[in-house]
Image (cartoon, rainbow, N blue to C red; front, side, top):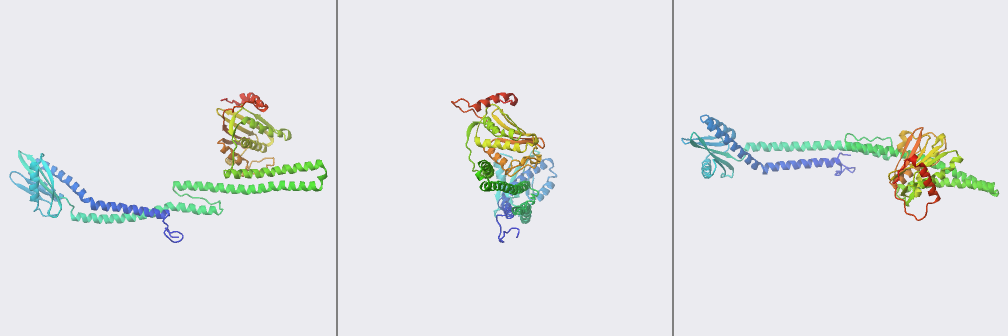
Length: 506
C-alpha cells in the first residue's frame, strides 16, 4: 500500500500523513504569498521611509562635520555622496560645492528645480531645516532636504537630493533571493512534513497492528508507544486492557468449568434421589422426606448459581432496580449475624457480633443484607482452623461502617486488587471445599457502587482479612409505635459495646 493511499489505491485525505503534508505545504505557501505580497506592495513604502530617515541622519552628520572641519568637509562629502547614492550641494556666501553620488542612478539636470522648491520651502518654514518629496517626470520619487548651517557668523545652506526608489540591481538581487527562499521553504516544509508524519504515524501503525493481533485472541502481544507521551499513554492503557482481557478470558473459562461442575453435581443428585424415591423410598415416608429435602437443597444450590449470574448480567446492563428505604443498618446486620450463628453449634464456628448504637441509612435493605451476607459467607469459607469471625459496626461522625473480619488464610498481596473482579477466586490454600461462581464480590461491588458507598479489604496472608463498607447516616424516621423487641435488644447491645467501639452519636 502506498504511503498516502488507502486500500483501494486512492489518495487517503483522512490519514494523518496526508493531512500533515498538506497542512505544512499550505502553510508554506501562505508564508510565501505573504512574503511576496510584502515585497511587491510594501517594499517601496518601507524603502521610502527608511531612506528618508537615513538622509536626515546623514544631513545631521554633514552639518556637524562642516562646523568642526570646514576644510576637510569636501573630502568627507564626496565619500558620503558616493557611498549613500545622494546628491549633496553646499551653498556658502562665497561659492557653491556639488558632490554628486547619483550619477549611476539618474542625471542631475532636474535637481536644480528640486533645489529651488526646497529653498523656497526652507525660507517659509519656521525651523532651520525642511524636507519635501518631489515627483520626477517618470513618476519616480525623490527626497529634497535643506537646512541652514550657521558657522563663523555666516549662514550656509545644505541641500541633499536622494532618490526614493531602490537601485535596479538591488531589486534584481532581492527578487532572485526571494525565488531561492521560496524553493528552499517549499522543499524544507515538504521534507519536514513527511518526516514528521512518518514519526507520528509509525507508533500508531504499530499500535494498530498489535490491536489487530489482540482482536484475534493473541493476548501475548505487546503495545509499543514509541517516543510520544500520548502514544506511550495509549500503549500503556492497551497493555493493561490486554492483560485484563486475558485475565477475564481465563476467569470465564474457569467459571464455565466451575459452573458446569456445580450444575452437574446437583443435577446428578436430584436425578439420583428422584430415581431412589421412585424405586426404593417412595413407600417409606421418613426416607422419602429425607431424600426430598436433599433434592430441595440441591435445587437451592442451582437457584443460587443462576441468581448470581443473572445479578451480574443485570448490573453490567444497568438493569438493576433498587428499592430505597430508611432503615437501621445495625438491625439488618444483626439479622445477618443470626442467620449465620447456626454454624456455631453445627460446625464449631465462633462468630461474634459487635454492634454500635442504631445507625439509620438510606438504601436497599435486601441488597445491603446481601452484601453483608456475602462478606460473612466468604469469612466462613476462608476462616481456616481458627473458625473465629468478628462482625463489627462502628459510627464516626455522620458515617457508619460494617466490618467482617476473619482470622484465616488471608489474601496474597498481589491479588488484593483483583478480589472485586468477576470470576475471581483467591489462590490461598484452604481446607473447606469452596463452592460458588466467583461472582459474589463482583455483585457486592456493583451494589455498593449503586449506593455510593466506600468499600475495601485489608488482608495479610496467613493472618486473615477485613472486608468493610461505609455509608452516610440519616436521621431516624419518625414513628408512633414503640421499638420492637429486636430494636430494644439492639439498643441494649449498643450501649454495652459503646465503650469498645468508641461510637459517636450525632
